[in-house]
Image (cartoon, rainbow, N blue to C red):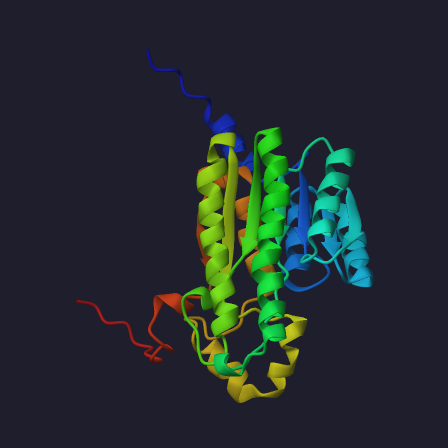
Length: 279
């Protein structure tokens, strides 16, 4: 016998609630600036209590103060590549909060240099933060979510995981590795109702890329690789993070969500055609 459908008003309210994070606790590593700061703001706007973490003390405290108006917030200072610091943060969160519903990590670094010219130290700096740092994050907060029986883990990759250019081989390798770690962990923790996904942006206008604006030929050439012919704003990536954090994406796991302005959908820059032809 089929169950009687809920009234339309209830169904509509249910959809709306799936895009909310009221009563949830979320962690954002890298919250001091850029995509991390925007993600903290987005999660707070949806009702979450946001735990902000970053090695930039002034920046992370400023973000926590900004988002506190939307709900609870706190700031922690740590290096995302330090295993002991990440584990200590996990222990502190477990001691203070009933559960951790969402955890997001955004820190990354790259040394733009031809692969044959890379030094050991340069390789270590990129691999340790990007790949090992993501592993430390997934391990520490994945364990928490398995114990509590649910949660959403969100890592940060890049279109450079699949498309690159000379000088980005090592950075790109780490970003491809992040996607594979996300897929692998998703396959292991799904039975505990833990979801694991990655956002995959292309070019995002943050303070770190401000020097490129002084070189319009490079800035505009990169923009031309997207179908919109512009750079993304951090808020546009943060909106994708918020989607993966909330129940609207309850059946999404092991995914790499492209937020790339069509960068990987086309082969090179758009042709600039303006006329639409009908068959």
